[in-house]
Amino acid sequence: MKIIFSKCSKILYAEVFFIFIFSTVSCTKKESIMNQPITTEESNPLAQRFMQSQEAQKNQETNTEPSTNGLGISDTKYEEIIKKSLVTKGNNYLIKQVLAKMRAGDEVVISAIGGSVTEGAGPAKYTEGYAYQFRDMFIEKYAADKSKVKFVPAGIGGTPSPMGLIRYEKDVVNAAGRNPDLLIIEFAVNDWLECSKTRAMERLVRTALENDTAVIMLYAAATYQNQQGQISPVADFYKLPQVSISNGLAGSGINQEKDSKIYYSDYVHPVKNGHTYMARCLMNLIDEIDACSTDSKYQLPSGYKNENPFENFTTVYSDTQDKNLSIAAGGFTQKDTEIQAYLHGGKCFPENWKNDGSYSEAFKMELTCKSLIMIYKNANNDGFGKYEVYVDGKLQNTYAGHEEGGWNNCMIVMIIDEAVSAKHTVEIKPAAGEEGKAFTILAFGYSK
Image (cartoon, rainbow, N blue to C red):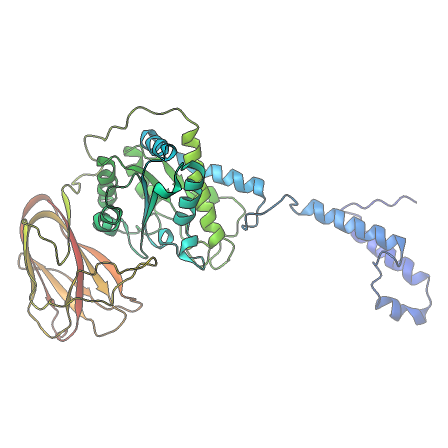
């Protein structure tokens, strides 16, 4: 009799097989047979055929293609979703210039600015983050002289694009010693309800482009969507190359549940293999651009995408010398050293103003501006309290220097936002009943 092992007959055959066994042994031997591995190949040729059928069926029902990417999908699928992440190559002229410098062995500065994903959160080591992996892949493939390529990391956790704008000069340009040749911007998972409504993002992009820096807009993914739809109109306006990790992952078959450890280590930070995927997506963009002819020379748009844009934007620290403003620090005479730190070393905004609660005298600043942003510290202890901000003598808002869940992280708020530049007086002092509580102002940023 010819035995056919199909999906429908597998269970039926198993039943027939057991009936055959039990019909050929005595009742006294049934118990011992039940306790034996009846499917061992040497015990019965039928068992051997049965096991072969099971293995064949298993191979039909599961994907047997190679999977070396660590994300639980075939390598073929992996390559497909890398390609899928490419939104647009934009105008490729500036990136072509970077590639030419790399191949010529010239000095090249690469930087990545963004939130914790860009900082390298998720893997066991921050240097396994996508920005570092991309740096290594990029240098390995395109640099004629690897020693001439400098990387400037500029990610910091829990921060949106307005803070990136305020940090850009210090954390990227000054850290590099000049404007970078290539800048990756990643704030798509941090820009929820950011205070500038993409004006800070536009100013950041425009500042880089004004200095002939090639800009790539990167949209990271999260278990809670992202702000790609909010940011992409700005990127499109400036014809930026764009990569969307969320686009690539959509329908990929990769387990993207919180704490899955397949792609996410929590709700937003990828594991090492997830960061590798991000780096590969960036490299795919570079490779695609390298394979294309060079676009016409990049021309910066004469106008802005946003109304009431941030023009002539300036950052202010406690050691800043700026003729456009005057500051009387009042009770804010100390430096706070317990502030948010970078994973790669150093503290964010060390030149700050702290009132330890010993003085109630207000911090007072006079300046001419149309927009003013303040960054302050959300302390991890209740020794910090609520402080009021007054603009031209009127209470603008009250801000808490300590909230539940605070970890000495940076908070960013818009204090002034007007269409026309004017002279203003800003005062910051303890709220009623909060005297004796501390408060730290980390920095300001304003647009004339």
